[in-house]
Amino acid sequence: MLKKFSIISPILISIYSYYIFATQHIGMDMYEFFPIERLTIDIINGEGTYPFSNRLLAPYVIILISKIGFDLYYSYDLFIKLFFFFNSLIFFYFLRSCKLNLLRSSLFLILYNFLICSWYGYYYYPWDFIDTILFLLLAIWIVKNKSYVYFIFLFIITLLNGERAIFFSILIFFNSFDLKSKKINFKSVLIGLILFIATLLYVDFIREYITNSNNNLNFLGNSFVLNQNIMNFIFTNWFNHNFFYSISLILIIIYFFSNFFKFNKKQINLFLIFLTQIISVFIFGVIEETRVFQFIIPVGLLLFISIHEKKIN
Image (cartoon, rainbow, N blue to C red; front, side, top):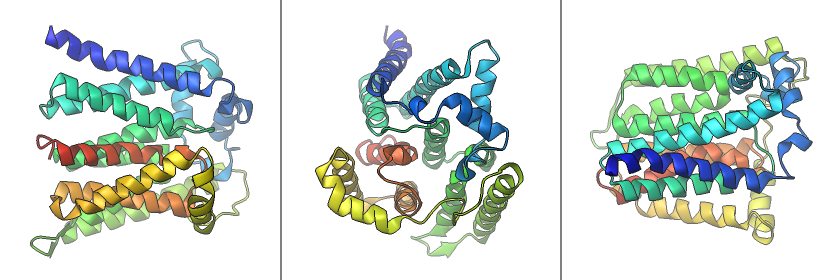
């Protein structure tokens, strides 16, 4: 009986989570302003907006789904349904593999999907969904001590989906320092440096090669908007619908810092990646588009769970 519930629970939660997401975006989704048909075809044809032009994986997945016989609009809808299904299964069965019981695994999955649904604002793009799964898998790599073959494969897939693959190289840098023994793994430093350079070269090459847009942006095709984001975060967001996001970020960062000296190496790596993600969003993202925080959720939540669940820690 328990085995049947272990199968049914994540499926039911994923279905209901999609329903909540779809209901939340009825009448206010991105199709009105950025039709997925045009967005997808433009990127594949090399006519997409400059910072989007290297984010090829998600548009090609949607095109692949459309080959079954759906139009691009419904293919995107099916793409989102598949995201909630596979993302829920991966998260749930990871917790179960760490010996968490059915109830706790299900409750954490509900929390995970609640955060995903509530942090998708007005705009959402297909690569954001894939990034959420990829960074969940990255967090699992950190916790489970999986092989570098797994890591490199994940890096390549992430690179095809966008420039956020650069966080993989940053993680390798963090992982090369042992705070307890105060030793440096120079092999890891070299691997991190190679991945960092490879990401920059790939992103720059793809954008210059396939895009017809003018490059009037700065680092990795993004503008520097730190000042604007700080002003909005401090003075504006407390008086609009973004209050929830602002207070949540502050509370969770304070909570993590308060536990920092209790962290083991895995938790330190999770925390450093989480912190780097937050900083990068404030420097290069537009925090009013809350979707930019999506790829942070799996890393932050697994760190939070590891603090409370010794079986994961």
